[in-house]
Image (cartoon, rainbow, N blue to C red):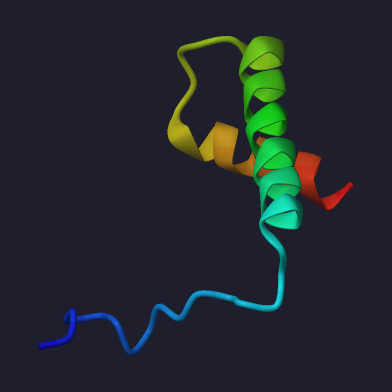
Length: 57
């Protein structure tokens, strides 16, 4: 039997693991940097918009 949402989640096989790790590292570093810059206590939407801004530049 397949997972209920397996038709929606298809892993990408065209990227090597090293590229995936670089992408994940960039996202993680952006998140930590944003939290260090803003600090704690904001609503989630503030951090979400900050991540969008950091990842789009």
